[in-house]
Each structure stands twice: as C-alpha cells, then as structure tokens.
Length: 427
Ligand code: ATP
Ligand code: MG
Image (cartoon, rainbow, N blue to C red; front, top):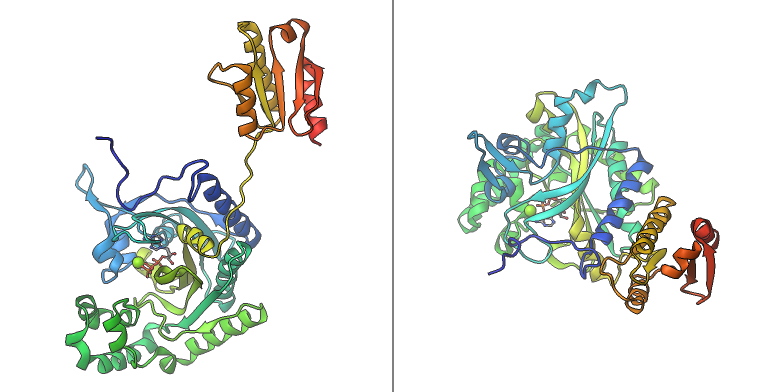
C-alpha cells in the first residue's frame, strides 16, 4: 500500500487547491515586508531543542507540555522535543548569544516556521503547522506592547480580513496576581469536584487557566468568577492604561476582556488575542502578550519582553471563511519551442532559454520532446506571454520566430537579438 502523510500534517503543493505553496510564500512575503517596515530582524532557531527548554519556557502545567509535545530520546539518550512554539527558543538564543550586549536595544526579532503539537486533529488544528511571531526583548515600555499589537493588526487588515476583534487584558504581575489567585480559588473551591480533570489539576498550580478552559461545563462554573482587573497593582494598572491610550491614539479598536488569561508566572501585564469572524471555535488568529519573567526562567537574566505568535494556516482559514483569497502571480514570460529533430537546433533553443533566464525572464522549455502543437498548448496552459520557435530551418539561418501570444503577431528575429526584442516588448 502507498504511504500517506501523517495525520494532522499538510503537503503544500505548487498550484495546490487549498493552500498552495505559492499562496503560502505570498503570505510569508507580506509578513517579512511588514517586519522590515517595523524594523524587526529574522531569527531562525533549530526545529528541535532539549526538552528542558520547553518544560521551563512553556511551563510544566500547560497543555502543550503536558499533552502536546513530540518528545523522544536521541541516539545519545538526550531528551529532544520538536518545538511546539518559538518564544522559548528565541529567549534561549537571546541569552546564549548575549544579544542583550548588542548596541541596538531592544532587540526586535521575528520568526516564521513549522511548529509541532500532537493535538487531536480538527478544523484549523494541525500537528505540524506554521507560526509567525515577533518578540521585543529588552524593554517594559507600553509602546512596545502597542507596537506588537499594531504589527499584528496590520497583518490581518492588509490581508483584507473583516470583523477583526482585538481582545485585550492585563494579567498583572506575580505581586498583584497572588491576591487574585486566592480570590479565584475561593470562588471556585465549592465547584472543584464538578470541574473537568484538567481544571482540577490546574486548581492549585495554575487556577487562572481554568478561565480559559474550552469545556462548556467549566465555562459555566467559572462564569461568575472574580476577574483580574479589580486586583491590578498601581504599576500594572498604569501600564495597562498606557497601552490602551496608545492603541486609541493609533486608531486600533479593542475589547477589554478580563477573562483572557495566560496563567503562568512569567506572563505579566498585557495579554491579547486577535479573533477573526467566521472561523468558529478556532477563531483566534494570533495570541500574545508580555512575559517579563520568561528570560529569567530560560537564561537566568531578568529582561522584560513582549511578543505574539500567529498561526499561518489560520490566516487561510479566516480568508476562506470570508470569501477572500491570496492572488498569486503565475504565468511565464517565454516558452521556448524547439521543433524538428535537429539536435544542434534543439540545443541552441535550450541555450536561448538560458540566455532569456539570465536576463531575468521566466522561461520554460519542453522537456518531453513533444510536437509543436503540444508545445504551443503547453505555452498557453502556462500563460506564456511569448513563444520563441526555433527549428532546423531557423537555426540554419541564425533566427527564431517570436510570437506575441496575446496579440497573435509573429516576427522573425535574429538569434542574438531575441532577448533584447522580448525585453523591449515587455517594457
Ligand atoms: P488554542 O487555545 O487555540 O489551543 P494556543 O493557546 O495553543 O491556542 P498559542 O500557543 O498561543 O495558541 O499559538 C498562537 C497561535 O498559533 C494560535 O492563535 C493559532 O493561530 C496558532 N495555532 C496554535 N495551535 C495550532 C495548531 N495545532 N494548528 C494550527 N494553528 C495553531
Ligand atoms: Mg493549544
């Protein structure tokens, strides 16, 4: 039996139906362009890391670490994990390469690449998926939070998505959160036996995550729970007010959502999500926030940071749900048609194709030794603007026929002039 791809993974094909590789590239180009505009540099970290990094950097109590990681022992017996996200690796690299010592601060980094989570496959949820994300490391300024949010917002608006919702909250800091945790536990304690197993586990170690549980029963039980906004200390409340003021000044609308939580100690202050209309349960296209305690955890240096991660497949889901698509440029400039059996003429036609490619044109050449008619068909199918026809007779006379496929005109051009001729026509 033929082997098929593992569950929850995708093949992205050129000309593919759903998410073609061209569309994926186009979206990635947009992401890179926006990062250039905002002054972010790309970081590429390994696709696998020592497991410990994610245990510490994502957190032992998270779904990711408890249930979703692809972890295995390598040949030397070290525990390795395929990265489920890229923030921990970015912080590791930041510390390992002492980026805090660089003159340019804060460091503004972005990444694009595959992540791996062993989740139950469902719409919009894959086991290998792509994330784009940014991290601003080395500042606690609310302007950095606002910049991260503006960058994310820019992506989705430039893609033409409508019904975007920015959900915004502050999860405080370990200081003010301690009080809140207590109040939350007090409120939930009577309902503890009815919470789902995961939430029962969370109750002691990570109670804020209970507010984030997707189980409808847990949602109900947590409905009247106290919210963090009442508990923020002066510093966190001030920071949050500044973030909101900056967003308002920049024309970014937001919904305050005091149930938006992250739950781990190293997440501090700003938490946000962007939702896109029409994609149902998996409507979050991106999630992020501030993590002033993470660098300490990963590389023992206390350095504030803020960032977000965005699912790239989710972008396509959101576009599709809104009847939008990514336009890709396909189509050739020139199809070189070699006719007849003269090997020298065929070789000259091939070399002519190379000359045209060197001049920067998009060129194809028949690799199936088909007849002229079939080659013209191929030229049409590939959307060639010009066909250059070279047979034994033309070769002997040092010329080629150049056919403008749109206008239908055909002219004879000296071989040495073909490139210049086509370039002038295209200009
Ligand atoms: P969820 O609550 O939906 O599981 P999450 O909290 O696990 O999300 P993050 O870890 O914050 O999500 O990842 C950021 C973004 O990456 C998500 O908003 C989503 O767009 C995307 N994402 C996360 N998991 C997957 C997946 N399995 N398949 C596709 N995209 C994903
Ligand atoms: Mg998840």
